[in-house]
Each structure stands twice: as structure tokens, then as C-alpha cells.
Image 1 (cartoon, rainbow, N blue to C red):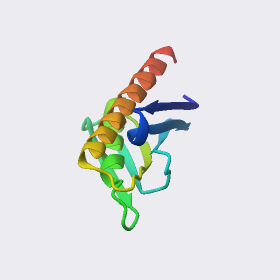
Image 2: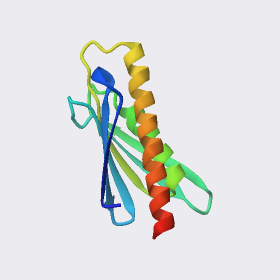
Image 3: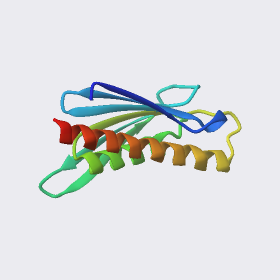
Length: 124
């Protein structure tokens, strides 16, 4: 997978994701129209122990760590390779309902990325 882009949701809760290969690893950016670097998460998969682990770095004052961490964990556990997720989603006066929708849209995007990665694994 050299590059893959997708969009989920509408209006204020729309998110975009881009996926790029970096050797056998994956770099995923998750953002909205107010794109920025809010948090970076590295997901790694240990084949011997069959488990994923995640490390997250968050910028001061940002709350993108939950989004980045969950995405990195789900991706690395599902595709069994190293993943770097850069997340930056910002909405002024965000509501709890909008947060839930953004998380749901992100999970939908992650699921699609997993499907694409698994399809390509069977092709190669």
C-alpha cells in the first residue's frame, strides 16, 4: 500500500484519514478540517506473545491521545505490524455527542484500513 485516503462522516464530525507505507510499517494521519498534530501513537505487535502495545505522545493542551492510541492499538493488533498514527481533530465548542460521532467515524475508518491491508496481504 503506497497511499490510501478516505473520509467518514459529514459536517462538523467528518474525519479524513491518509495511509502511507513506510517499508513494512504504516503511517496513518487522522484529522478534520482543522488539521494539526495533537498526538502521535506508535502501535507495535509482538508476534511471539501475540499482543499489541502502544506508546502515545500528546501535545500540551491537546486531547487527541485517546483517538491516536486507540487507532494505533486496533491497527497494529489487526494487521500485526508497526503503525504510527498522527491525530489532529479540533472542533470549537465540541459536544459530547460530536465526540462520540468522531470516535465512531474514526473506528469506521480504521476498520476500512484493516480491510484494505488484509486484501493487499492476500494479493502480495
